[in-house]
Structure formats: structure tokens, C-alpha cells
Image (tube, rainbow, N blue to C red; front, side, top):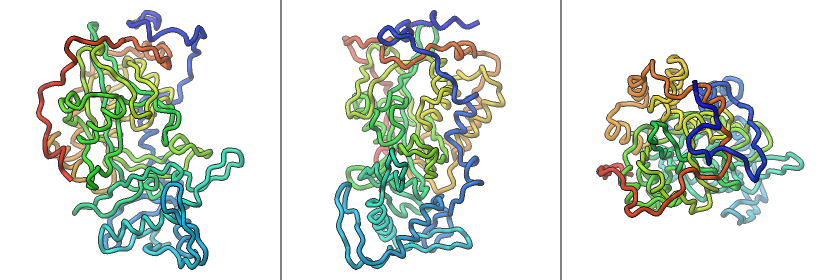
Length: 453
């Protein structure tokens, strides 16, 4: 039988906030399968909501899943004439008196396809930039009246994402607009954890800033970010982003991070975004994330030697939580969806989900490693084929399930049910300035993973 919550190690995680007891929070999801399905929810919505397939001229492959409302907006922009206000930057516009309609799109009502015209990546990129210029001035989100249009564009990033075909990059799109067209994306997530003297695992989590563009004030992993375009103007890599984001978000040392710069997995998901993604008032904005996230692990020996400090304003604070508390937090819906996906994968990898039936674990593995329906970026291909030494994302399912122990239960269901509320900022592992800082394993960073474009 699991120990009651008040007897968990590290009592600083238990208690009250300013003397006021924290009331238990009801679960949003019944099982971890439900948590993962919430992230990988395309199957649930695509059959009941109209989406068009996005293609490029001369190529029948599908590169995006575009909601009909965005298609209608493109159609209206094509028909625009006369005086039109166009965006030139985040808060700047210009007025064109003789606008002659948005160019570069072809719509096929019969086949439900929306095609970007152009013979090169640059031409197609220009079409999307012109589209953003038309849409951005129309963006509105009024919490009082409920008026809402292009709400995602209010979270302007001034950051492009590259989209790839089998032969390389096919175009770029402003990051805030990618989900409107259901374009594929790439990112990385770093999971930091350690095992205490009693064999219990603890994981570092960061509370996202309340003003984050997406999923504000939700729990996250120690660091993560979009693998977009680097400072040289070339597509970034997961390894480079891992090192960059670990320093910016958690103040981790670059040399320390380089010791952990070998990916351990590439998880995939297709999700229809809900209100937490853009702060809109409807349950779903029907934008689609079709993403692959490269996962890194940072396994430390002594958490008191790790100084996790928010640096760029994207995180409010960090804290450590054990496996039972992590699972409880995910069931309560407190985690950013793609982070819940990656954390569930890590718990599965560490044999910390043996309290649930083997069949459910197998279903989780299938969902976690769902392959997106688009060409992978060269960086993800390199991660899978060279670093992970697997031929496909699906091959990881066999790998993680092959390590499952069906007999030993590490985390008791009762421990999860009784897990103490973990919304407190108190840190049970107070940082103590060490005589020697925690050192990363002496591993070599794959140069091709760091520099590949």
C-alpha cells in the first residue's frame, strides 16, 4: 500500500499556501490514454469538421490540414478590391488604394484542396507573407463581445517556420499563422530528472508565464522550443535549439547542456487546438498542430547542484515533482498538451506506468509515436536514422515496449489518487552552491546534428 500523501518524502512539497489549505482538484481526464488522446486528437475532430488539404503547385502530396474558415478567408482575400489595409510589421500597416486581390492561391471546391502557387520555395513563401499581410490587420479578439477573427495572429512571433518536402524546404510561414493552415512543425523538449536514495524519480517542471502566447500559466518541462529558423537564416536543428532554450529558459550552462545533447526520441502528434492555445473564447479555433518533437533527457545526480532560474520571462518558476504528482497533474489537465505527451513517453521509458494494464501502455506508445502525414525535416530524419539508429518513428514503439516489465509496479495507483497538490512554488531541493558543479556525462555531440541545415 502506498504511503499517505503527508508521508511522502520532501515534505516541502506538501502543505498550504499562506496558511490556506489547498483544495483537491478534480481530474479532467480519467486515464493517461485520455491525456495522450487530448494531444493527439485529430482522429476525434477531422471527421466532423471540414478541413481542406493544402498542397503546392505541381505536387499532389498533402502539406497541411486547413480549416474551412481559413479557406473562406483566402477566398475573400482573393476577391478584395480597392482600398485595403495591409500589415507591414507587428503593429505597423500601410493602406493600398488600388488593391487587386490576393494572388498565389488556387482553390478546388470539388476535391477540397487549397494550393499555394509558385515554382520555388521563395515564391511560395512570398504568397504566405502576402496572405499574412492581408489577414493580420483583421485580427481581433474581444473578450467582452465575443468577437473573434484570426486570433492566432494576435500572437505574432516575427519568426518563420520552414516546411519540407521529400527534396528539401518548400516554403516558410510566419509561426503565428502555421496552425491556421495546419502546417507541419518541429520542436524540442528537454526532460530533467533524477532518482533519490529511495529509488523514487523526481522531475523538474516549469510554470509557464501568464502572458505566454500559447498555453499560458500551464506546467511545462524544464525547457522546450520551436525548431524554426536560426540566426543565420537557415533551418535550425533540435540540438542547437536544446542548447539555446536550456540557457534562455532555465539558465543552464551551455557546456553542461552539450553533455546531454543526444536525442532519445522523436514523438509525433496531430492536434486541433483548443482555447488554451490562443486565448480565444470558443472551445476550439480549429487550427491544427501537426508536429514532431525531439526529446532530450537530462538525468542529474544531485538536484541541489542544479540552479534552475527563469531568465527570459517565459517561465514563472521551477519545481520538482515525483512521478505520482506528475501523473496527477496531467490527469488534472495542468500540463501543456505536447509536454504531457513527452512526459508520458518518459514515464513509459522508465517503467513508471506499470500500475496500468499493458494494453493501455501499448496504446499510449502507439499514440505517442504517431507519424505525422508529411515529409520529415532533414534534422528529424537525421535524429531517427543516425542518432537513434531507427528507420522510422514507428520503430520506436517496438523499442520502448520491448523494455516494459509487466510485473513490477513502481508507482501505485493509490499514490496518484492521494498525490499532494503540487501548485506550490516551494522547492524541496534547495540549491546549494557546490564546490564542484554538476557535470554532464562525457559524451560527444554529433556535429552533423548541430550543424545540419
